[in-house]
Amino acid sequence: VVYTQSEILQKEVYLFERIDSGNREAMKHLKALCFLRPTKENVEFLIQELRRPKYSIYFIYFSNLISKSDIKSLAEADEQEVVAEVQEFYGDYIAVNPHVFSLNLLGCYQGRSWDAAQLARTTQGLTALLLSLKKCPMIRYQLSSEPAKRLAECVKQVITKEYELFDFRRTEVPPLLLILDRSDDAITPLLNQWTYQAMVHELLGINNNRIDLSRVPGISKDLREVVLSAENDEFYANNMYLNFAEIGTNIKNLMEDFQRRKPKEQQKLESIADMKAFVENYPQFKKMSGTVSKHVTVVGELSRLVGERNLLEVSEVEQELACQSDHSAALQNVRRLLQNPKVTELDAARLVMLYALRYERHSSNSLPGLMAELRTRGVADRYRKLVSAVVEYGGKRVRGSDLFSPKDAVAITKQFLKGLKGVENVYTQHQPLLHETLDQLIKGKLKDSQYPYLGPSTLRDRPQDIIVFIIGGATYEEALTVYNLNRTNPGVRIVLGGTTIHNTKR
Image (cartoon, rainbow, N blue to C red; front, side, top):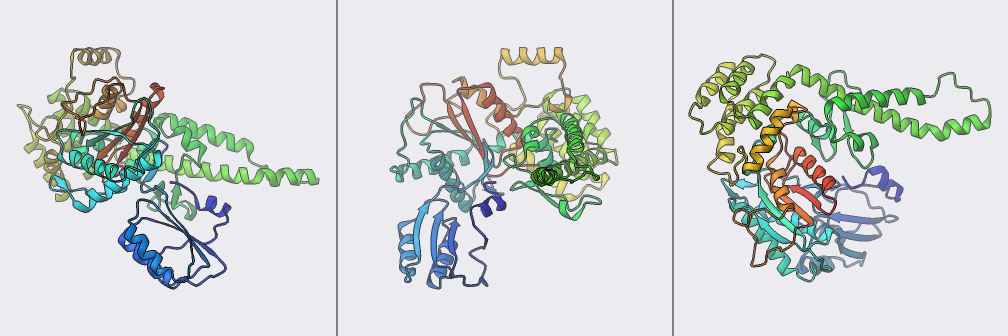
């Protein structure tokens, strides 16, 4: 996410310890670097540490703002004067991709309002991001969401209180923070994905760049957990936004390249030069070997799950529910899949959730019948309950935007032309609502009536630096949308964040 252990080792850091681990040995020959969130618990652990120091000198870095009273408590505990430095180093969030961050928070709400602790944590994470990027933004928020307004106010309070820290060099066009609510688009997190990073997260789960493969049939010991990081894995960096069919071809090319470079077993090491060449090439070969085996395993497992769970067919119907408006065909297709034994409980419930959101107020709504079919199939009660929960969370009554209908004549014409041309890939027809929101924002057309500014000031020019934050979590499909918007709008830089990065299970 930031640094690999091997990269830290290269900086001559040899020991990694948690501050809450009680049985650490005293090692007075070592210096300690402490990187901590400035929580009450961590400050208390640090006070105890400084009273009985185990290392010769302490360099303390907090990932966010620390209060003067906490600094005073630490100074009082440092009777042996072992603290050499205390700094704030704003990194109180997880950098997921070069343009994506997460706070790794689940369950932000109590009912439809913020959980107080989660609101405080989200405010801290978002202000740390602004400080690390050196941005003092104007703030807009989704009017239909009380939590979005509340978070906007909390961030503004911190900026006002810490005005000296936020006194960055003024830019011609001020940066913009746009705060959105996941409930405005509950469809996107429910869809199966077909680009590499999004698909891995949906089917296997990405947790701080780590993938748990321990349940893969016949997995070897060294591949039970693998790391997927664009910074340290060239293949992943080049393929994370490509679709699954392209990944298969690229894996084949990677393997063929690997086979060509593979040292021959009978390779003669007759001269010193031969041996030197082999030793020089070996680390690169070993690294490539690890990359090949990792991606072949991941892609192989994705492929197995796609077949086992009949996901091509499931995904086609999901896309139809999200993008088309033929109720009778959609209902027929959902019913057909509910009767297919290969379709898992999760996928069956997901299809009914999508139907419930899409045709919530349709005159021929057949949700009770579909719920009865889920019961007959033996789908677990916890999955069935999610159907009404998702409508309550992101249904028509809650949404501030019209999630399904084209907004104007131009959009209707575009949709008609798209239908004439035929969609290149039936599995990737869907575009998140975020695409349209950001497109309108970049063009200076996002309505103040739906996304008001906090405070009296408004932006006269089109924004260039945009930070968009989704309460309730962002998705890798939205990360792809932002990646493409950054590519196609050279003067615009967009960073996407969320309380978490979703997949259906979250």
